[in-house]
Length: 268
Image (cartoon, rainbow, N blue to C red; front, side):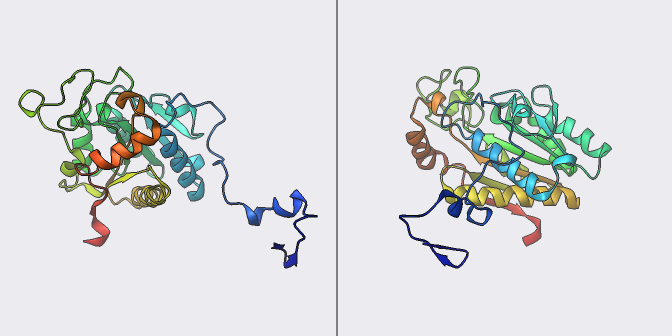
């Protein structure tokens, strides 16, 4: 083993020989507060929070960013990332983000929403903000279920998927089809970047972080609305262990919610 061009004897090595800034491989983002998160163990929200904190910190935008917290599992998002936040009424985050951004044109403004907040009660706000091309970022956590209120069916619930309100599985004749809203948003003139990511393994996390950075850069460059959807897990609502929830997500959700960029005006 060597450090500072010196060969160290493993028998005589001291912790101070290893614990140095140049040897750092992982650390908690400075913008993540020390509050204990309320999310269930294995939930995707915590990983996405970490990525947001990392990207904002790396961009040097900690003092000029504003997140819009939703109603849903992530209603307390403002407790965890040390930036300015606004709390929106259920589904109205894009409307509030529009106001914040228009009044603070140099600020990084993003919403953080679940599938109920964004694609159920907030469908109109989401579509019209994107159609106007507001220079905001919409972060969308899609776990195909209403996790906070008891595991009911959501607009994004898969066909055949069992929930508290579809105990025999979602039936299209009764419940309609899954609302793949990002596929709709990519068709709007005002969106500049629409992507679907995940955080179930290291490779996916790295891609997700790059997607967030691109979306935030687009916002500051005034290119229009960026949408970053995360295909996420809800192991409590799905009644699976965290590990099995990740496997179930890959096997069942990604065929319907395909991962990758859906629209990127920089590549058109």
